[in-house]
Image 1: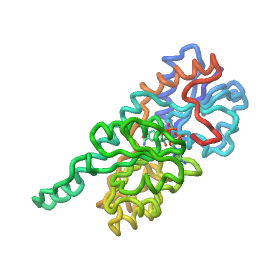
Image 2: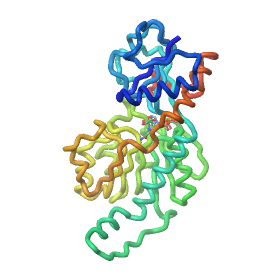
Image 3: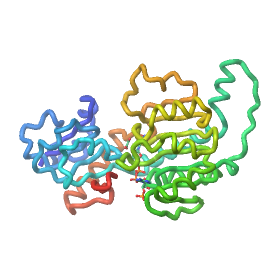
Image 4: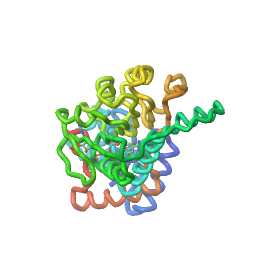
Length: 310
Ligand code: NAP
Ligand code: GLV
């Protein structure tokens, strides 16, 4: 039984093979490019696999996404849809996302980008902001990451609202569900955090229609996936003042091309897909545990719903 590993960087693939190998010495773990007998591969551990690669393995029992999202696996239309996909999630990853969301929400709330611009111009301007309980923040997606981040925002004191596909009850948070609940969720929201999975229903959701329903001057934080955002609509909303600032961790093309207008935009903060990235030492422990459990029982709690797309 072989576990095939693929990440776009060969050095990362080697690193993950090494880490998984140390934790699973009884398994044959090797990079995709070193597989001699594709029929021997029963599990694949991947981040952004190349289209067609997974279909080479006729005896796959499961695919492990090196991440919470499975969109990068489903981009490969040749992947047989009956093969289960296991997400990689855990408390360390949730903690990292909570930190990212709290950091950037507070940064927007306290108007830090304007303070930094003022400092660059040696300008003393005491900007007064309301306390958090007078600020409404909204989290799109109330799964592992969204619910935990929303709860932290509520603990800080923000008026916190959340939006998901199915109705939710989360202490301290006002929740809305489905497209019918979207207008009420957006109305009055001053900081909008996107933690949705990328699916056919959520692609392009951060568009002019959504921006126009927010409080004028709202901020956007997208830590989910680049294609949630309509880039041109964001640029127009920043220009008009409907949106005052955007913090973006994820992009249509990563790395973000050097000539992309976002890089030099004064109202955009860029982070290079680091909000909650899995490192090999942490991720390999979670994956080794999941693979052993799946191999013994045929299931794990972190199974994605492939038909649903997340
Ligand atoms: P999750 O547990 O699967 O939760 C997804 C949430 O989104 C659920 O609450 C779901 O609603 C909601 N949702 C899905 N489709 C929807 C729709 N059409 N309308 C409204 N709500 C919808 O996902 P997660 O683990 O929290 O991760 C979320 C995403 O974050 C991942 O898919 C990934 O793209 C991204 N991510 C980014 C980073 C980074 O470093 N930037 C790191 C990790 C993850 P229900 O609860 O009703 O199903
Ligand atoms: C990272 O983007 C993930 O999906 O975990």
